[in-house]
Length: 241
Figure (cartoon, rainbow, N blue to C red):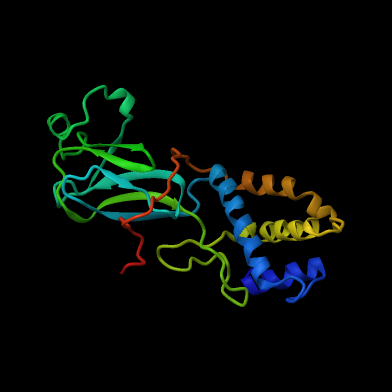
């Protein structure tokens, strides 16, 4: 379904037009419920919306805040700690470390070789425990999960499932009708005089669960909340190229 088809379908079901159900209102509801659905999809199958991202390693810096388009998951972390070789970092938790976190202690206990370099997730950031960190362009790489791209244009004739770019993800086709149905339900129940819902609209939760069950048979990984604080952008998701 394209955004243009989406708008036509929703207005047909709600008996509205572009004046009584404006593009601005429909886009607002689409994006709110897109994120709600994405949250449920990622619970069922976290490999949806996967996108690797990179950040520059900075000399002496161990904390790297997550980018703001991440969707609550980290699958894998690698880094070029020696400036050349990209190695996987093993995950550990600070509660099991039980030692000082000063730079001298860290570099004495860890190194920049595979099996001796680790990461911890704390304060919405990756913290690296390794040997001395030097500056390396795009030296840190994570496999993470993005929010599907925001809808901005209801005149578009590009399918909503198509990734807008190499670094952004579209919205899966299997959930297009459910997103439309959720917008329809929101419209029908938000006015001064609520409109009667159809049988299919009343079955929204049941049909959503069936769709989620159909995508759940894949490997799972760990979940971590992610958000980017204000300030310098550390991650390169391709938009700076």
